[in-house]
Length: 128
Image: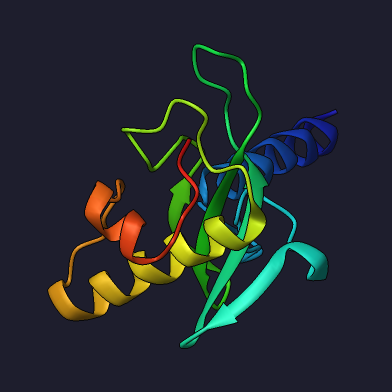
């Protein structure tokens, strides 16, 4: 009986030890599955399109993730165009916005989460 109790105690201790370790098997947690039809590589970063969360008008649009390797750097599920109630309606526009965010990060060292209206006009992003 003592041996059985010892084995059970040992199993509980091992399970508790492994449960406390963060990221035991080093599984990348990107949050989204990358598919090739909604993925673009730009300057060493991967842009992965995702459906954006609809705003007050319940209009579906595009959001994106920016990844470097398996690490998610930016998760943009909301409309990055605050002046546009419809959000980003075209995949090409979502890619342009993500590319601009990457360029801004490389020049300033900060990740942007919104795009100014004049930049959207320069990039010919449809906003209305």
